[in-house]
Image (tube, rainbow, N blue to C red; front, side):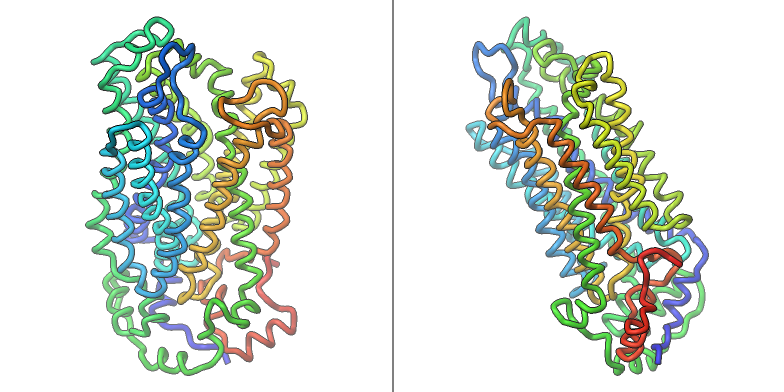
Length: 538
């Protein structure tokens, strides 16, 4: 016999869109705004770090970070994020979403400031201090993934739940945009106050001593939105689904949601007691019952996020070629250090405006109309098409006259990443697992994605180096850009295949998707009859 749905959960599922929904989106979304700002702002200042700390006397080109240092500075935050996703995902199910939510934000605030105050008496010691703080910054950022997604899914109604979770994730786009804009403002102000000649005219004078403040201010700015959000996060009540289904405190759940929904709700402790005595819903993550019910679902969410992030974070491969080819970023030796920061920040802002931000909000607009499955499949399909379209005639795109076409193809690839699997891989894991394992499973899925990001950012940075001819300084021979793009196209095609393991949650309650309202016998009957939750709604 199906378990009785609690009134408080039913009220949340059927609630009309209210002010508290938008408040929750902003509170959770500001965390993602900060996450994106902190993760992506480092790419704006990487070249400046090379000029300041690794200048070589008499060199024709400005100093750059050695490959191992560059990999550490850019990648250590990803490693921290992966660890944070696993740890805080687990902790969110053990201690409650709200109890852990403030911790992640405080780590982000402290480590953003610490990154900007990185110290040392040698260049390598400054980089080591920066890497230390960026690892723990990533650790806090990682916690925001499972907690924000779970909190938003458990607050939302079932009609517009996908749009609400996607809107939280879409704040990443504004964070990336803000990173570019802050870089523009700070570099423009310093360049006006401390003018300097181009590197080719005077190598030493092209990097003024005040340039050291530029990168520090840019990375520290990420602490501001996080600090402003902390108070409001602490005022949010624990989600009713955690309080009722995991903590088994029906009275508190009804009290919290009565205040939020502004309606009177019964506590119904007898239903909690009755449901908790029925078998079939107390299995753990490492159990046969979990594998039978959700094993393929977890494989689907982890594999698609892993494959997506390999392709998504590989964009670093050809950003420098695109920006230089169309004249957005002139040769480094024709600019001074702060001017180069300005040009890089401007280019990233334009890409965010034209491609990144619109893709996110297309997903918000359509996810509850056409479903998660359709958007994810469509996104992987077009990413595959555009990757192959870039790869097969790659020599054609390298000619200067064809660079605009390359930029358009590049932008469309990442438009369909954001109006596609980059958003849906975040949404779905927060909808399909039981409440007591929801944050943990989302953290596992997100950590698989960050493992893919590490492969995409660094594995393909090495792989894309040509086997013959000129390579980036310090890098060994690879398979070349064309072959790398072909491999990325195949990875996107694999993402399409694994999408069929992910169930469609559109219009269904969280308990219906996780089967928490079924007993053991009913689940077995459903599975044996073949009437299980399908990937594509029929």
